[in-house]
Length: 372
Image 1 (tube, rainbow, N blue to C red):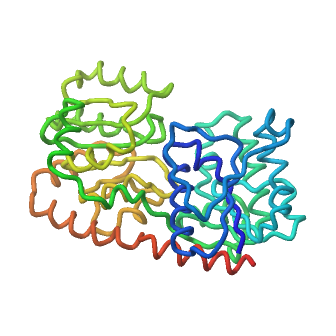
Image 2 (image 1 turned 90 degrees about the horizontal axis):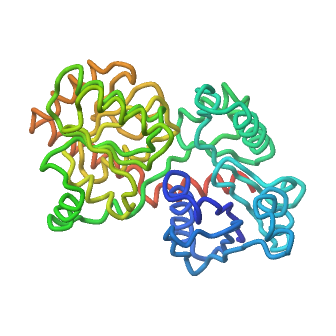
């Protein structure tokens, strides 16, 4: 079979949607090796490592106008390109399908990660919300199958987007295979020394934006005077100054470290060094960092209210994303009880096996068969 992918984010997004795209291509091309895979992307960022499998062909805009307007090519030109290459199934890996593809003899699948812009509209400019709604819901409407990355996203698609339940398949995502590779004591220590981190610390990884709710952890430290070092890893954003302001106002400079620009390849070592992972996000479509932490053998405390129980499993701890007292109490309980930590680590590592490459490939292929 000839399968096409919207690979823009595989080549141009370092985290999140990029990881999902790269992992989907990697998993399917290795599990179903007899297919031909075509990766449609308007450009390639050479700073993002993406080893293209041998049975994949990269498709870039070639015409003069397409090269000058690559974003327009992605929206309006890919349908014709895919038809010309006799693509049998096209998978939009991040919310979108090309305009006009429904008029070609091509089966279509679109992955919907979340509808956060509809759940928390105050976090998005009005123009962005209108554009996302038009693009995302149109793609759901024309797709033969819609993949939701969690039961939470499925519910949102039905309730907020009016998507027919009968065409939605829940297919969980996994995490990068680098989190399944052993990290030696020497490797972990080298990263700890590089960033001047304490011997024990609480870790939180995620974009430095309001929705990720890092400030709840800081509030727990300040309000309950907890003497736990906190390391927050995420690239700088417009929201970062607010975090720094809170740190300064509450005299947390000696307890909170903000790290930005950390290479993805060093994330496993950071997890390996951490005593506890805390992810109090207000809302997620899946919450990959939670699964990364479990896979690396780190106890997890996450937030209620979205899908994090799905990615964190029954033995992780969950708190309200607005209750700093509850979070502080849970942090104290986990960090002061080594037996509890061992139980959480064992259960989390076992739960993470649910998201194996084989399971993901099997479930993706079922959705493809339904789309044909």
